[in-house]
Length: 371
Image 1 (cartoon, rainbow, N blue to C red):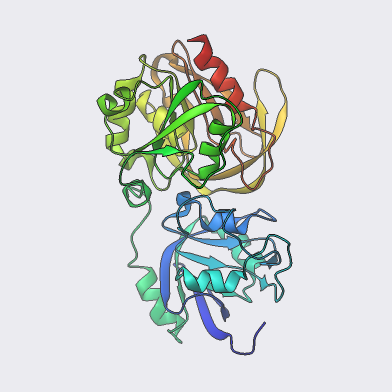
Image 2 (cartoon, rainbow, N blue to C red; image 1 turned 180 degrees about the horizontal axis):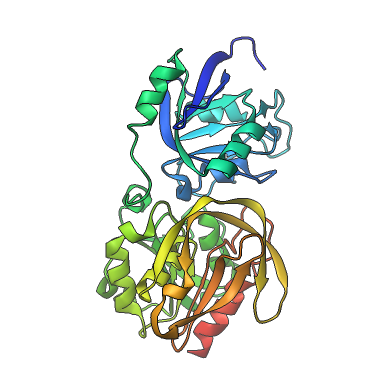
């Protein structure tokens, strides 16, 4: 660590304060503190739009050792509000590396700290639950920072999708992406609630023509593209606040097969007439065990969400559970009782991994083919 590193603070809304060293942009950042248990993939975490509004604390202690590159991004820019790690690697060593992590953070104006006891932060969040927090490289008094943390907005009830969605429809692959080796046989419309690029890559790799639409698109807008299937993407914030998406989804039900991923899964639960609720500290990382209810097979999955579907709130047995979290029993997958609609709370596209659940894209395309 350079001797030029500046002292900085992480302060949680309960008053807990952690001193660290500034490694990113200078200034302050506020958001909901969450911890991520992945050992690799920090660049994918930084650029995942689902982290809009959140400050991410990495539990793995050594971050930055393989640098950053232009290929491992999951969206057009980083979205985390702030980034907290235990130890920034002084060396970025990888044949794909195009630069060090700290320079990347500065370039994208991400306030970040290292030298923080991330184990203590994680244990506190597990015990107390997710909390608002603030990072500052300019405020020497954590008490003054705390007063600003306690005035920061809450995630519950906030629509963050509007911040991350695309401004206009576009086709994937983008011009600079490699062409798919397979013919474009099916047309998939992907609703961009904060989509990760690897969802689009996985569909294109299976021979789909992919059109991405802004989150506020209506059912009529979507159907005008004559899709064979619609994918409801991941995204940030409280699903109950994204009311325009619910209206569109209800307008699509019974008219086209749908796959919901993460936020898309939660939106489907609401569209079925059910409720969502906020988890104590969410699921963030690449090591969450999920069981397929039908096959009893267990897959290790990538997850990033703070809300979940309350299955017993869905009226009339409109949907059934297909996958379940083995850590806390929450619903990880659903299937509509009569319509060709399936959903997953976790990320089959993974990126960075593991890839246990990637086959579920093929299962959805089989469903589309049957229709």
